[in-house]
Image (cartoon, rainbow, N blue to C red; front, top):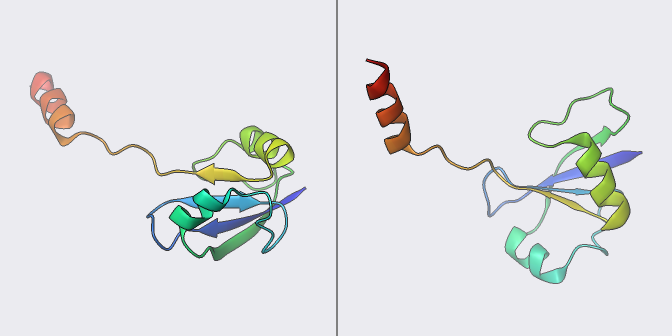
Length: 91
């Protein structure tokens, strides 16, 4: 199984995984509208030979099979206040 990964031109660190190149037929229209025109990032095998950055390969495979796509969102931003307080407690 392969997946085709597209990056969003509108949302930083947001990626859309589909099974076939340029096939967005199973992706909801509202999602595509918010995602923007997908920009091809890469094509990867999902056989475990390559590690996915920021996504669990099992979740990606399941989502592709069941929903026809997988949306990878950016990790939550670390709170600068939380970091500061954590560092202050170490002193």
